[in-house]
Image (cartoon, rainbow, N blue to C red; front, side):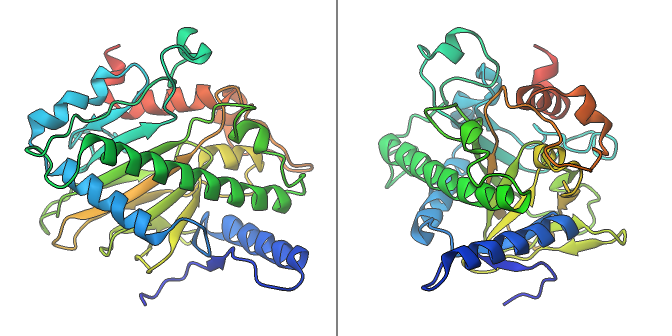
Amino acid sequence: MPNSSLPIIDISLSEGSQDAQKKKIAADIDNAARQYGFFYLTGYQIPEHLIAECFQAATKFFDLPTDEKNKIAIENSQCHRGWYAIGGEVLDPVHQQEGDIKEGLKIGNDLPLTHPLVTNGTPLHGPNQWPEISSETMPAMDSTLWKKTMLTTYDYFCETGLEVMRYFAMALNLETDYFDHWLTRPDSEPMATLSPIRYPALNQAETALSAGAHTDFGCLTLLAQDNNEGLEIAIPDGTWLSVPPIENTLIVNIGDMLAFWSGGKYRSTLHKVNNRSGRTRQSLAFFYDPAYNTPLINLTDGLSNSSETANETKTALDHLLQKIGDSFSYQKNR
């Protein structure tokens, strides 16, 4: 097992006093979120075979010719869904104007064109773009199976995200279901996104990064990694800490929104990807974000929000639109 300073938190419950176990899990999550903003998660209910199948499906898509992938280019979507090419996302424009050395997919809450949020023109809401797969373009997998794999994975990640957010509610001395209203149907339509990502191997002489240093935009990120290292996080002493893959774990990290809600108590930690493994690296990032009208306010007593942005940003949608507009060049041309 690779060495890491990050805690590994098990959310499975054994026999005995479940209340006591839940309080211990909430306390462990609270400590990790304060110190690092990142931790390993185990004991979740996502089947490992499903994560493996999702990786395989993503690989088959990324292996397609560019003209096939371009059929679902993110530029063609009105709600930021689909494929983006290498350099399509620029997470650190100050140091890497040419963009990240990665390609990825954005798969979100698949709303029909008739949904009220879509007909009202609410940004970031609408249908996904799905690839048209044939036996010629993607052997051993058809469009129906590919779509089912992605949507099933999406649903499982939603369930795990909600479970973790309930522990955060406990840690913040809120009712356990405090965040449910903004994160679950039928009360709301959360803006969660499943994002398979592929990072080509970088030449050792290159100075570019696979993903520039950034904080995540939303509430909570759940990340499945393949067997290749590359993820690094900034820790308080000013150095970078490697976060290697550990079998049967996910990485959880705090996004900007949860940092707002906690009044700066939890860290939305700067991180980057530096794939010097000599091999192609893949990950599955799940951005668990709330309904568009969720207010970004300090939910804690006696703490001031240290972020000026929190004073300017009123809702989850406001913040996501700002961040996506800053990091995807195609958005600037709309």
